[in-house]
Image (cartoon, rainbow, N blue to C red):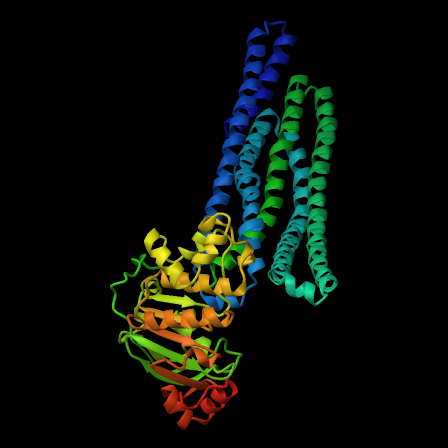
Length: 550
């Protein structure tokens, strides 16, 4: 604003300088005033530019913080319907565009607009007739811009959508690069990536085309206005209607008018791109998220084991998909190990997802300690649970970071004890930097069995009241599997353990076994009881070479 004000005074001082020269008066004061205004304009302009850019970066920072925090709390159902690469593009490229919206658009529109109004007022003071000529030219250009601007918005939105598609395609490929290479599918995936990149290019070029048309329309309008003012003003000088000093001052204002007009047009153009990015960010912020809650304290090892019950639970992952659970009912008392067995697709892993409240059942109730899961605050509920997923994911970072992910306050003695329990102590001893060794992207520097043991150790370090093991020993050799089976048996003496297994050898010593088939619980009992009473379990046992006398 100050920069604009000092700039607006320059033509008036220049007019006074010319008049002083014409009247043969001293011009020292006018020259000093002119020099002071020029220096002040440059200095304040530089400061203003810095302040605006710093503010813009702060806006980007705030948007990235808010969006990343929100995305971390999305419901799993929302994540299932979204592409991770597209969500990442909204945090990175879309938020970056907010910088331009802040500096070139919103601020530019405000300061440029006010400067434009002030310039027009001063032009009216200098000569209303020439002002009318100038405004007629500008309004004609404005009509053309009204047609162009909506097209910029559409092209910018489509370009950003294409960037999101490209990010999703790239994340899809990099997330399974070994599979892509092993399948010889590099060329096909390359074509898909290139197609997404080319679509983004096409839409960006469209936006650039319309932006260039808008900019050239504004430039042409100002050149036309200058020539028209020069011609009309020259005629008025010839008739004595205005002085040469007045014409010079007005022409300076025409020159000065170019800057705020370009600011306003640039602001409108930038806003089209920024509003497209902003709408994508708002779409992400509109995805369903888990309810906010107070941070719950980490569970202590002295906490009592939890009891669990499912009552007539029906669930499907989406309305257009078939039901996974058809009235699942079972009870798990506090303490001991309960194993879930059954064919693939029976709904065993879904039981764990519902316990963690990654999803909510469509009907029926799930209770923990006799209290419905929906009545628990999510952080408090999950702090009571240790969960080892089927694919045992390991995050990029150090081994220590992964182990302490669920309980960063665990002391060194507890960590050493869990490492020994899960037979990771030998691995740590072999690693060049011990616990501080980087494990690579998704734990690629570890074997499948090592990743499983890391996941189990991570869960045990939470000292959970309820331990969920989803096929937690599938990638272990016989020696390590036997050792961890003994570990789980020890844990089950003081904790409630739920275990999904396809290797029935890992669950024959369970206190109870829940047999699931086609989304229903068909039998509950011990290994001995089920071999005698349930044909499906007996068949599973036979195919796993289990002795029926066990």
